[in-house]
Length: 178
Image 1: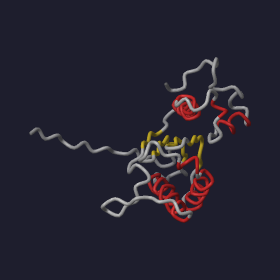
Image 2 (image 1 turned 45 degrees about the horizontal axis):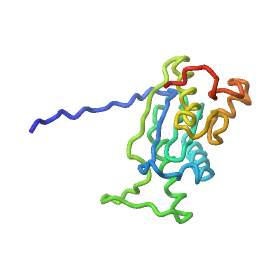
Image 3 (image 1 turned 180 degrees about the vertical axis):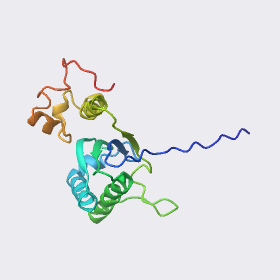
């Protein structure tokens, strides 16, 4: 039997960095995030009160979310912030009576254990990831136009004049990270 060397993934830890994240629910058929969007927003605010960060862009689908988080200068601890968001959401769900199964180690089985992270390095990298985030509900064929999805920062981008009101819809040309 062949033994494979275990590859150690090293996360980027740049203080004050801007990062793209994907967080996913274990049950990909779940609708828990959008069903409980108010609780999720509360958990983000609570985590931000404990450890400052800014959300540059976000989109929440029923079973996963993408976001761009900016950390304060000199601070590289995004793992604590992500852990807090996930933990607070589980606790809030339990408070409203949601049933969440525990594994053999006693850990709640709501979120996938890991998360995807990518440090944004350039303005074009940032724009590509913002576009990817905002186009995601169209990519998943949930809506025909990005602005039709209510759980997205695309609405703020439109309101601020950073995107047209028909951005990412049918007939609108663009490369949205696909």
